[in-house]
Length: 41
Image (tube, rainbow, N blue to C red):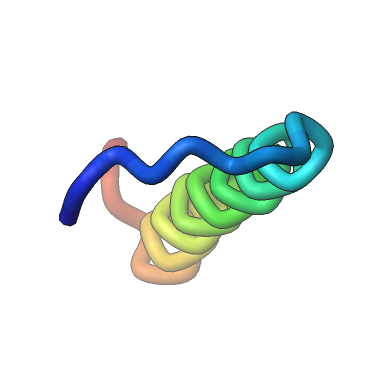
């Protein structure tokens, strides 16, 4: 994938925000599955 420059900086900001939400969601899921299996994280 090439680095395509977006003419609108808001698009990049929104992309970064949605990316961060996905990361937080993955972390939350990891913690929940960890707790549900009663393991030490």
